[in-house]
Structures are given as structure tokens and as C-alpha cells.
Length: 122
Ligand code: 5GP
Image 1: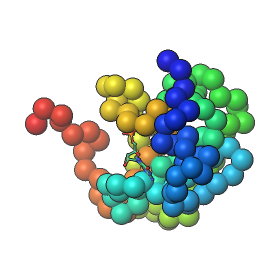
Image 2: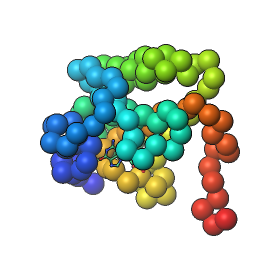
Image 3: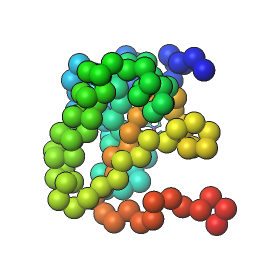
Image 4: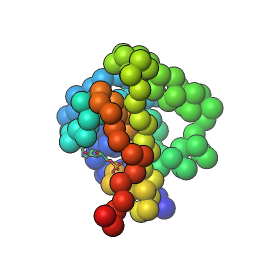
């Protein structure tokens, strides 16, 4: 599978469409999800062109991987979520329900988030 440089997050990275930025450094951008599912709902993305979690962890440099996870810790602390808890989600591929084919982690918090997954057949 080839990276689609026209995906929405690639356009956000190129500043072709706006976002509400929360954190940025050389390797990472984080911004508010446009349809928040919790009081805190932040999308954290690497700046490199990676399709999904597997692509990122298989192909990215050690620096990119470390910086990505360090950024997550900074953003967690910025919202004090380490005190109350939170959830990180990386939807991947068809079965994971991934909509945007640029690797991203959802950081959700600010309320009790319920069971880990909902039953799609319920
Ligand atoms: P996925 O299902 O791929 O894990 O999640 C994609 C997420 O991107 C969804 O939660 C959706 O609300 C969010 N999203 C889609 N388009 C945009 C956009 O243009 N701007 C922002 N900020 N979020 C978006």
C-alpha cells in the first residue's frame, strides 16, 4: 500500500487545511479532533509519511519513534491526564476502522471512557 499524500492529515501538515494545534515539534503535530468523542480528544501524528501503526513502527527512525512517544507524554501532562487516566487508540486498517491513512494516535480523556471496545453487532 502506498502513502496517499492527499489524505486529510497530510493536508493539515502542509497547512492546506486548518486545525486547532495543541503541540508541535520537528517530528510531531498534535491537534484537536474535529468530532470529539470525549472532553479531551487529541490526534497526535508523526510528520513523516506513514500510513498506519505498523508502517510507522516498522519504518520510522528510532528518533522519530522516541520523539513521538515523548510528545504523547508532554501532551498528557499538559492536560493533567496522568492524574485521572486516559486512553490511547491507534485504529489501524480495515478491521481497526481507520478512516484517515496517516498514522495517528487518539488521546481521549476528561471522563470515564467505558469498555475498551463496543460490540459492532450490538
Ligand atoms: P480514525 O478513524 O482514522 O482513527 O480517525 C480519524 C479521526 O480524524 C476521526 O476521529 C475524525 O473525527 C478526525 N478527522 C477527520 N477529518 C478531520 C479534519 O479535517 N480535522 C480534524 N481536526 N480531525 C479530523
